[in-house]
Image 1: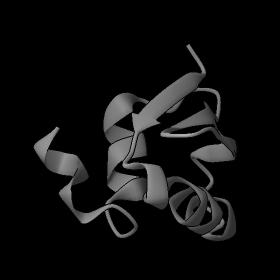
Image 2: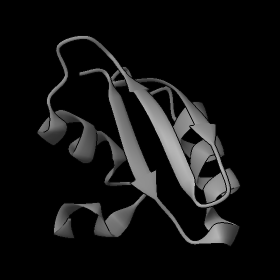
Image 3: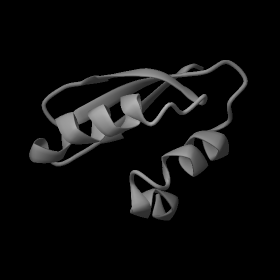
Length: 65
């Protein structure tokens, strides 16, 4: 319940994970970036909507998903 996954293009994963980690979002505890996937550990009690709203300034098109 506290893990979220974002699929990315290969060359976006490290920068996106870095931006998420450094944005000091209380909804996200941390990230791990793979080749084309970012795994996020989500704070207890945060909904999918909370996480998407928090990430909207980093990933502008996230609300289309």
